[in-house]
Amino acid sequence: MKTKIEKFEDIIAWQKSKELTLTLYKIFKSSRDFQFKDQILRASLSIMNNIAEGYERKGDKELAKFLFIAKGSCGEVRSMLYLARELSYISGSDFNRIYNLTLEISRILSGFMKTL
Image (tube, rainbow, N blue to C red; front, side, top):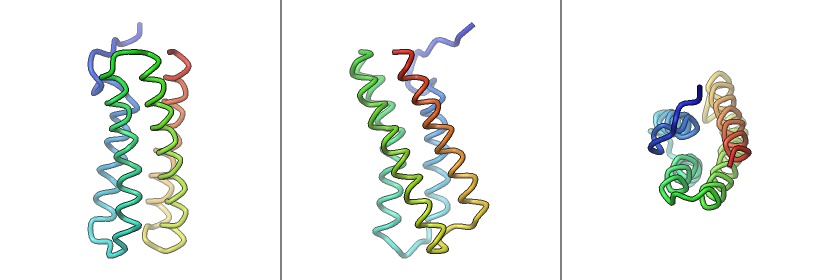
């Protein structure tokens, strides 16, 4: 039996993207590379906010469009993780943990889009 989604907070991809965003905020809290920090945090916020906005528009076509945007932002975060690792802004274990979370979010979003 599938769980009915009654509000955007019920969407697993939103829950995971909130976890991603909170993790990135904690990791980059004291970063002095303000441009990098701003960009990765904005991309992460874009994932969760596009899921929420798309759901609140109450139409499958609109939701799919916003999920597509969220998935792109997920790729942007993943791309920036490589730079963060190579610039030694994050540890290898943080990279792996966050990278795997972005992959999971992307998979969930892809599956969700297919159901619409």
